[in-house]
Image 1: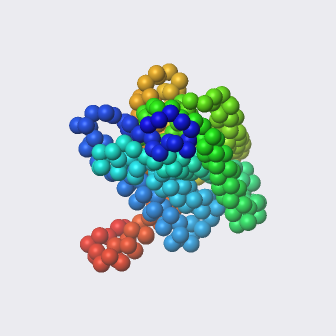
Image 2 (image 1 turned 30 degrees about the vertical axis):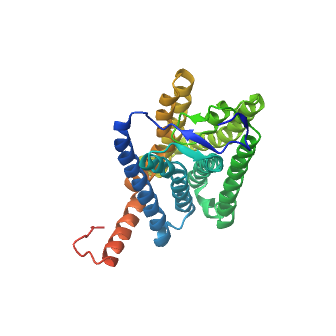
Image 3 (image 1 turned 90 degrees about the horizontal axis):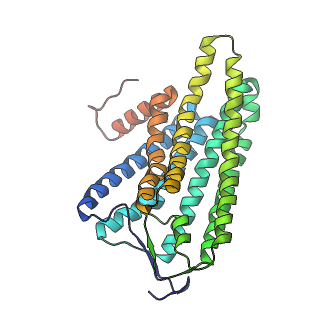
Length: 321
């Protein structure tokens, strides 16, 4: 491919997680299984929240939005990887790569914002229980969700437009299983100093502000819980936050792990392997965390699965409530 700007670039090459052909079937089956479990688990969460009127509260409505975001984020990366393995091709079109960058940034940012919104919801529920229904009214919940989507879209579009102005050389190989923004910028022949500065500034804003909001919420939650007189009240308060805190720890823990891995490792393949924990693991584990730790969600899932079993005429499949 001739050296030139972005108008002459027709495709990039995704090198994937390994060059060993013998491992490709294993990787295909592993990621296909994880993708199907992710889609099914998050879809069950959405259906359970939609079908059970007891779960029509801000916390579970935000959870349904989070599950939808997880489905979209997983669908932005894994299907293309599976297709490339199946067809024994490494190519992705320039437009497809740019679209993938945008979708990953939008849905990754949206998940980040939704986790902060859910932390605020728990803060209001525990620190201001008598005013909870007044503060977390449907109008505010809708505005918080729309605002999270808006700033995530702005983040994705900003970086996508930034990539459009880059020029690329003859090396168009991306040592990753999806089009990661940082890897694409490394392939650029043009001066990318401004682009790197922009990435750090936007990351500090879009990552730092939600993270600070989560920390602020939980500092006040812990302070409020410790002032409760009864141990039963403390346990109930902490149990309502346990699932969300587990999801937050998984999301930020894996993101921090990827950052550390990329900082200390010179191997792009090792960084790609580490990024699996950030782009796949949280979306896979979120339904299990909420489905197993949350009593109301477990009951709703049992009812939903029983209803599906009856609908499919499977009388032998019976779950006790």
